[in-house]
Image (cartoon, rainbow, N blue to C red; front, side, top):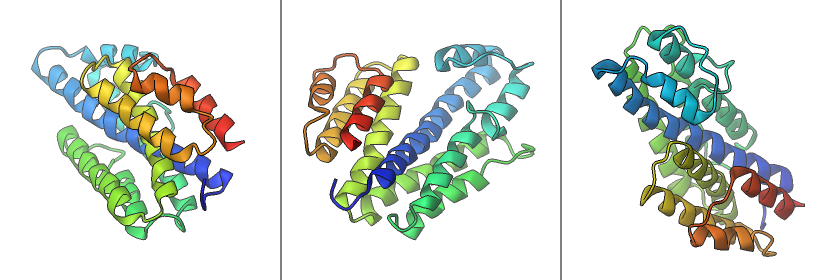
Amino acid sequence: MGTVSITQAEKLYWLGRYAERAYTLTGLLARYYDRMLDADADAYREYCMRLGIPDIYRDKTDFLCRILGDAGSQASIAYALGQANINAMLLRDRLATETASYIQSACNAVPQDFQESVSITLRNVTGLLLAFWGAVDDLILADDVRDFIKAGKYTERVDLYTRFELGEPSLGAAKRRLSRSLAHIDDAGVCKDLADMLTEGRSVTTRQIDEGIIDMLQ
């Protein structure tokens, strides 16, 4: 694992997962928001079903406010950003300062009262998270640090793309990128079978990947 400790590796992995969760769900929420505006006010119910969360919302307005800004709800974008920010702060010595700052800025871009439009909020969060991923590629010089973040990123992407049935070529590309990330960090070949399954396009659960990562770190 190079210069990365086990504790740091876990935090890097979860930084990648939470940042990607916020990014992908922001994009998906934008699609569902358009549907809710156009013709299907109850489209958020499908979003809940695909994400596997209970539909506890009074209407689309309640859904949008809480799924975006309720930091106490594990299903919300605010929660994912908050968890990513906690990990980024703990890893500040391994991340370039600018890299971590994009996560903090994304947290600040989600208002609690939603006086701004939902579209503006989604666009701002998306832009800041894209800047974060660009900084991961360009500013983090240690390959092992970057690879653990990307292993988390693509684990989350595979999970969400599967839940929302995004299909090919997007899901296949995410699986191949996850396979490459696992190969880069798995010096002992503990996750080789998982990586091969992903490369071949076979079904792999998030639980299998998490368990593989845990085994690799032991």
